[in-house]
Image 1: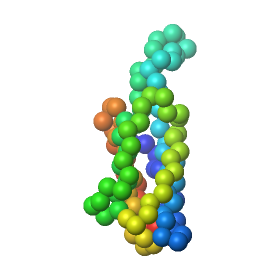
Image 2: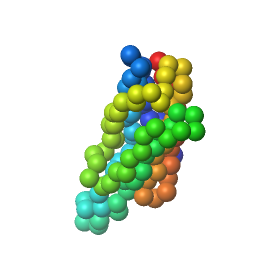
Image 3: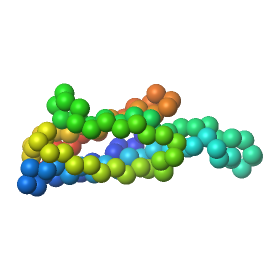
Image 4: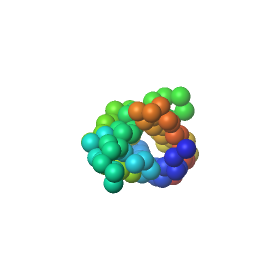
Length: 104
């Protein structure tokens, strides 16, 4: 299992600012190891953020995204202070990670 994501969500004037730092190696499949063998592709392919059961943000990622990706987005009208936001990613090996935080 991957390391936990660092999620910060703060509300100001009705707009929730969400910042997510994901821990993932994000291999492109184009690099080679010290022996010259190809390192297989391994990257986050989909990401979803939910407040309750409602998806408030969704993204498709690929091998061009850097190691330990950082993502920031804003929500207006779909979340408020005290709500819990859950962020889930799935990678191309079908590994998944979900972490949650309360909107402050």
